[in-house]
Image (tube, rainbow, N blue to C red; front, side, top):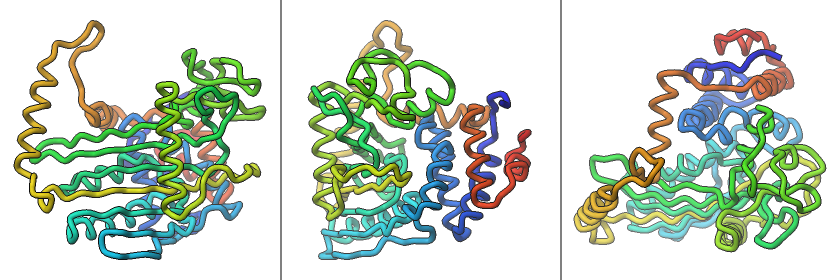
Length: 360
């Protein structure tokens, strides 16, 4: 097995783009998928980065993912939208659905947008960042239809997906606040990364197939499966339930109760609520209070072990600055899986390695 490597963001994007294109995606889609995945890596979320490509390609080959789709509007009352993702690449569906929702929020002051039947829409913070760039507050509730991998509080096996929730607030002339978190103790992809790197997890994060505490991430990656625990005990479990019902049921999509048949597809539903502070009539007051409160908040002395206080979204920006300079780390197992995925769509692994600027 080759050593772990560091790959420049531009080269890594080109390599992933080539694989997606060879899988049948048109140029815009291949580029958007690649850029979105690498952006997740850049922001320190390797769980939602290029390591997802092997699963996407398997899903594409199985028919659970369909190339070159766009969100289909099935309901439009103005402030209310519902869209069918048509099993398309979530990196495109999520972006295009958010564009439509932003247009409606700008026109009406408010938009509640339901998206269902989209293939894995990735890091939800990407869509929140899209909203705050347009000057909008946004809230997102997401459910996952795949193998249930998160145990409810007090439960001994999986019943939820990682069911993320994201809330974002724009700041005039400054970086936004973007709170984006899984309702599980850890994102499922992070357990995959740990497994691929041969690392143990911290105690109290996962259980094995018998419902017993374990630190071995294999129980969330290969059979027999265990489960990830919810964060915050009953609080995380309760938020996961709400994300399931709002992101899945209310949008018109499904919930995670469907029997798992071993398919690689990952379908997401997402309820997004967008608010225009300008039309709400509090924009100037809102911005003034944001800055006043953040100043007061960050004036608190750092606790022992912390260099400073950070707001949501700041760690991701720090990670990106670092990785743009030093490159994106890809462990040997993940890289081998990516090369294998390329071979499945007829692209030689040696060619992918050449594009990425690394040895095969």
